[in-house]
Length: 190
Ligand code: 5GP
Ligand code: MG
Ligand code: MG
Image 1 (cartoon, protein in one colour):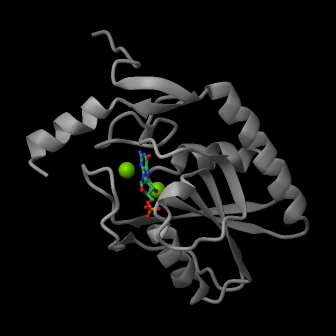
Image 2 (image 1 turned 90 degrees about the vertical axis):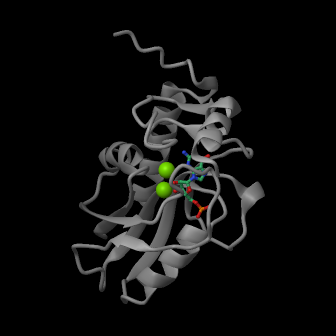
């Protein structure tokens, strides 16, 4: 069976090499900022997994990992604004330097909720590191300490980001052809 990766992608927005370079820079910056500290990285499942695994290897400090899962968009491409925790932390975040690792901040609703939620657990600090940010679509204020790339309002896939659970394994960030989600909408009648 042949698989044409580019079939559903309009164009590549961020190449594999650009991703690798930026992740290195973020890792160096985080290493400098947290010198002498230990980091508890909290990855937001599932989109942040690829970014997180590369980012942690670019950080030369003690790093431990934990994960949270929050309610997702399902087959839609916009946020419902309702955030539900589907999987909570396994570790205690108290007195830890928490670094939330996210794939993309769009409306900001998810992270706005999560930051408040994590702050209530009395960590030593909470910061956000996101691979991508779409500031044009912000509805809730979010302070981003580390941002890989600011992008326009495109629906993107790859390097962990999905549409209906597909495309996460693409090594680049690509713009999804609108026809892909338009036809999914039609068949799901949403
Ligand atoms: P927010 O609450 O900031 O609107 O939504 C954040 C989440 O929505 C992201 O973690 C991601 O799962 C999803 N999301 C937002 N924009 C995009 C996009 O362009 N592509 C993909 N694949 N997911 C997106
Ligand atoms: Mg996410
Ligand atoms: Mg998704």
